[in-house]
Length: 115
Length: 112
Image (cartoon, rainbow over all chains, first blue to last red; front, side):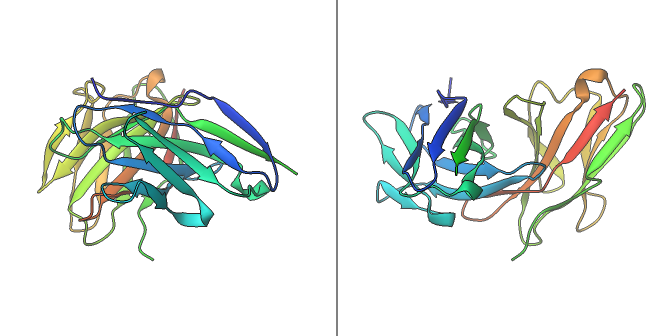
């Protein structure tokens, strides 16, 4: 079965420090991977995606993610965290068994950036 | 920048009542989706819709649920007889031709 795992429920990081939010996946084929951010009482905002090509993907708000096929990971990173980055982050994979491109989401990781 | 909109933002209803959640997808998108997020849990797929019919649905999407595109812009999710466990945040999404789904702000449904 295809799945996405976000092993950390919460990540705390000091403002100005680099941040990493982890995601691993399990798919039977080439993965299509996505990161979304959810601010309080808001919807899911698209950050970035990996479809093919360069393993380092750059997205919105200074975020990037590195696709690692051997480790089946797609960790979200940012060189210098801001307090305003505090939010809930979801990793998702496109379900390759589905003809409708539906997403399978991870459980989410709450990022807290401390001033 | 075009975005997906949803109404209402909050809905409180009594168990057994019908609710209709509304969404306006991005205008040139062709695939539409409903997901739900029970408080503190992950986002789960409910249903996808293409060419005026359901293209896929999950086991959650039972006979109490239905979707409709009554006109060229709205996309609705109806829950016929709500249950307590239907309380959740419901997200609508539409998919671009590049495969990225764009989500609305959600409707928080509370069933009492």
